[in-house]
Length: 150
Length: 173
Image (cartoon, rainbow over all chains, first blue to last red; front, side, top):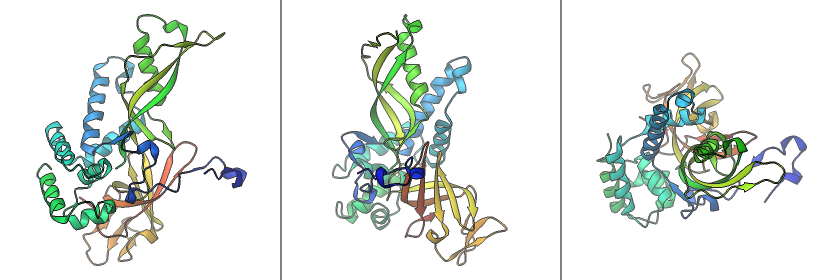
C-alpha cells in the first residue's frame, strides 16, 4: 500500500496513515484489534499516570521529575477530562460497561469518555453503535454511567 | 478512544559495565528512557511503560562488540488517534483561519470551513462567537468536542484536522 515511489522527493519522508482506518466503522487496523489492544477510559489513564508520577517522585535524585513532555501533557489532559474521579468510580464504570458484551471495547471507552446524554447523541457521535443496541438499553446504560460521574 | 494498552517489543542494548546485580533495573530504566515520549505512525504516542513482561529474556551477546541485546516485551500505554473518532480537545489558538486545539501533545486544526457558519470570528477577543447565543464563545482554553477528519504523520509527530460542524460537536463543559 506504499505510495512512496510516486511521491516527489520532498514528500517521501511523509508517511500517510492507511486509508482503510475509520473509527466510525471500528476499522482500527490489525495492531489495534480487540485481541491486541485494550482501549482505556480517560479515568483509567489518569489513575495509571498519577501512580507512575507518584512512584517516580519517591525516587530521590535527578530522576524524580524527569518526565517526557508527552507524559506531562497527557497527564494534564486526562486530569481535565476525568469525569469519574477515583479508583472506585473508574472500576464501577468498567464493570458496568463489561456487562454489555455485544459492544466493542473501543465503543465502551468512547461512551465512558464522552458521556452522551441520550441514545440519539450516543449513536450520532459513535455511529458504530447504531444497529448494535436498542435505544432503551442504551439510555439505561447512559443513565447508570452518569450516576458515577462527579 | 485514543488511549490503548498494547504489548510492544524493543531490543535494548546494554554495555558490559552493567553486567552486575543491578542489570535488571538498568534494563528497565533503559527501556523507559528509550521509548517513553516517542511517537510512531504505527502505535502513536508512547505515553508510559506500564510493565515489562517477566521473566526477562536472556541477553544475546554481540560478537566483537561486547554489548548484550535483550529483546524485551512490555505493556505500554499509547495514544493513537483515528480518523472518524470524536474526542474532546483544549483550544490553544484561535485565528480567522480556524481553531487550534490540543489533545495532550497532539495538535488538531479545525479550519474555518469546519466551524458552523452561525459562529463568527471576533478578532478583538480571539474567539468564535455564536450569533444566536452570545454566551457561546470558543476561545483559548475552551474545551471543544470535535471529530477527527484526517491524520498525517511526519518525521517526529502526528498532526490532525477535525470538524465541529456536526450535531453534538462544539463547545463542551
